Amino acid sequence: MAKILEVSNLEKTYSSGSKTLQVLYDINFKVEKGERFSIVGPSGSGKTTLLGLCAGLDRPDSGSISLCGQKLDNLNEDARALLRNRNIGFVFQDFQLLPTLTALENVAVPLELQSVKNASKTGMELLEKVGLADRFHHYPSQLSGGEQQRVALARAFSNKPAVLFADEPTGNLDAETGEKVEQLLFDLNNDLGTTLIIVTHDIELAEKTGHVLKLKGGRIISNETAEKW
Image 1 (cartoon, rainbow, N blue to C red):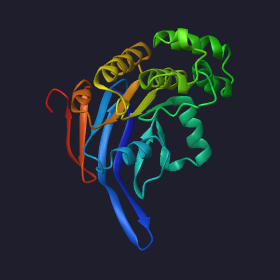
Image 2: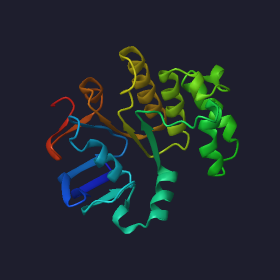
Image 3: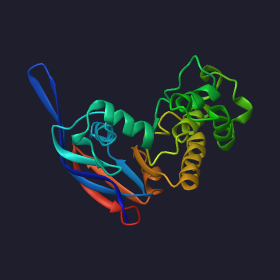
Image 4: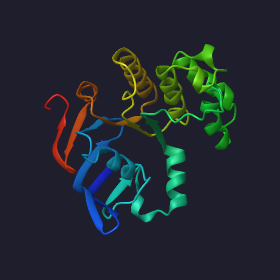
């Protein structure tokens, strides 16, 4: 199968004053197109840093990343932003909806910025898929946490991304709501054939994906199919 993400010899260090902190050490892995892939580990293990590097939001100190057939090391910031806009979706733990926009506007505005025709119609279709068509005119403050994350899912899938990066997508939700959001995430993933890369500390969520990469102290300690893990 085609590789949609390839990470080779990746290392990342942060500096604070005279001190340096190495967050990632010699990270190597590959993700197949259409795969469901989890990155797990305790707090401080480097999960979110790794996700940001893989998505081209930050640059490593050494090593290389190939995403959707393009080497990120060769791209300037504008080219990286274009790659993300065309191919990447994001879901975050804290939803990151714009508070002054309605649910529909939060989904449709990214499409309008890309000059997609019938952006509002597409937005409504996506809100219907996540069960929020009747709440399209509500603002984030008028929605529950689970509803906000469902809007965030609709927005993330609006550009039919090749890869969706989800950072602790159920971290701020209770167990029952989290399970509903997980199912929606997987259903939308199936419908659109998106490659799904989830950063989570939730072992049960990770085991629902096909592959689990486990980090500890910035190093890979296992990289297995979920059945073997």
